[in-house]
Length: 349
Ligand SMILES: [Zn+2]
Ligand SMILES: [Zn+2]
Image 1: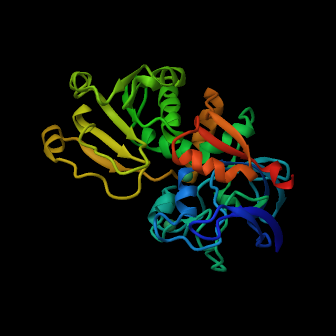
Image 2: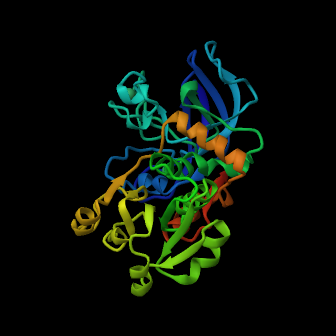
């Protein structure tokens, strides 16, 4: 066992606080990583606050994890001590069902094992996330951070990046694709950068004109104000894919007429009920509403390699772990451009 420092939520309504716990002794196919940076995802906050009703405490959140390998089990073949490595939202899956065999571990029939808030498939112990000094993970669920990708900014790719990359790939976005992005936060800003990097024509949908300069700087071709009924009517049937990153309950009916025939609205930001959608635009335009959870390990590696090749990196605001509660408050009111990243060296301060 290996003593690890971190920060955890101990109840649903108290601030995150220092937490000492044990990581398992590495098994033969495990790597041990020292965590250098960890992104702060909206899910971390939901989990800490038990917003979904399934949190058990204490829980150290964090599933956008970047660091270096400091030890490897005897059977590890893909990683060497000193290598740059990353871990995202899952640390295990059954590895034998049809979905796992297709590289879709996120859709494992038995459920994947969450990086935090899950249960180790062998010992049953609760998994703990990246708001900590060390992590032990089987090598199949570690990602290689390509050379040239700035480690201090790469962490948000592991959730915000893959969550938006995967639907772009699933619906074959490329040059000529017309992609809309709803919500310009951690997920949304990555959706813009990634879709633009794939050659798509990207439109940011926002309730206010105020985000236009940011949208264009991130790579969008334009910003469409969703409260401007005339502009919205003019944009009807003009999109192949809309990625909806809004993290709270909202009305989809506004966006459905924007889709072309066979167009897809994919929800990635909100877990829970949406306002009642009308089937009229769905039936008349053969449009569809769907959702998408993160991505498989192979696709996550593909995304990291794509970002290195295209020099695509999240916009990050670096914080110390001691500032995590302020970061949660600011994230809750969307006061971040666009992702907080914890410099884990601050744990030792
Ligand atoms: Zn996340
Ligand atoms: Zn499986």
